[in-house]
Length: 299
Image (tube, rainbow, N blue to C red):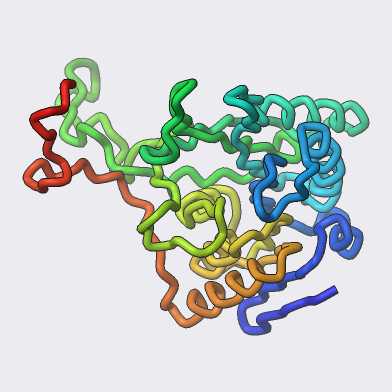
């Protein structure tokens, strides 16, 4: 087992299967778990024999352990998409919901995992399908351990679309109707995915943007809290933890990805990490040639 510790930042990385690391972690010691497990579709970091049954078996074990190490009142965020084979899809969030419900049957009410949002992460670019509509979203399942939990909405508010809107009648007539700190971002998040020329792109084929864990960390934890990602990948959650002054524990099987994560963590510590700020998506500039429609296009 290879362990990497960044002493000044309280960051721990394990180049190991998370199921071998979980036994080393005390019960109810983690404040927030954010992860995106493999979809078992034969990616370079998966076994070629992986399938839906592999997905079910792995996630049952990992979620069981995640519930154990999570503090009461802690948060768990499972970012997941679709298993696709021969243009037929399986919505993996439905399977995760079933797994959690089975685990909950064995738990007391104050230790059960409660689903508060099924956050839709929408992105504008990706592979173009030919035999079905092109997939442009995944989901983040936000659970809490128990019904009493931390949720800091003010930390993630976004600008209103119509900030100048006012109440038209009643005691507040003439006053601005929006919250001065911004509006609730809702359960649909429009955040560009990490593809091609995205500033955060690494060699990892299924990397998600820093803005996702960063937003979750702000809303669902406090500075100094311990965050865990059992499927570290290229280190995105670790980088977000450094940016938001949280401690971190992460596991990753593939040594190449651990090397990428270590470099990104070093960059984050030094303030040099490349990332796209969590800001609203900008509409294309119609004056740019790339945004103009060619004459032969019929739409």
